[in-house]
Length: 140
Image (tube, rainbow, N blue to C red; front, side):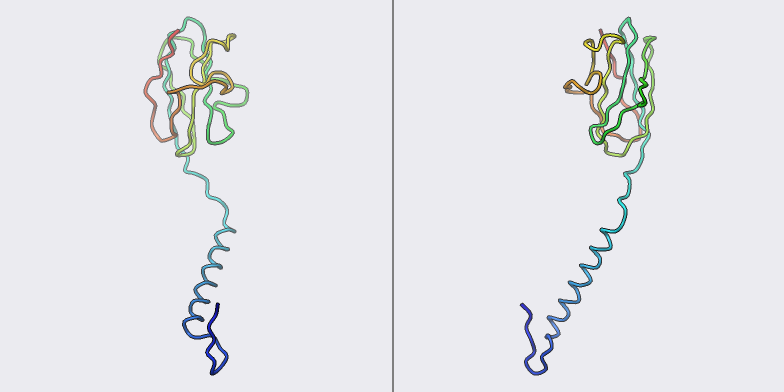
């Protein structure tokens, strides 16, 4: 409630100063609401895989923070030679990403979250940051 100076009918200096501070704070809040959201910093993260399975293994990486899949566009990363393979992706810093891998033609033989991010996993997710994962070994 505003206190009035009864001699002139104007707010006291203390109340006027508080009103000015409140008006400035509200103006600043309104200005921030009009600013576009800044995108998270992009990072390049390398995922290292080695499959010891005798058949071709397909891999996708699934963001748990947004609706995004790598490599995307109905493509998959392919493991087919028993060698350590690197897949580099651009992701948003701090984004949670899980891998899903499966034997080509047999989605029931899977690692991580499997095909289409449909399975549960305990240690198949990483936080996006510049650098690389340890070698993720997929054993039969």
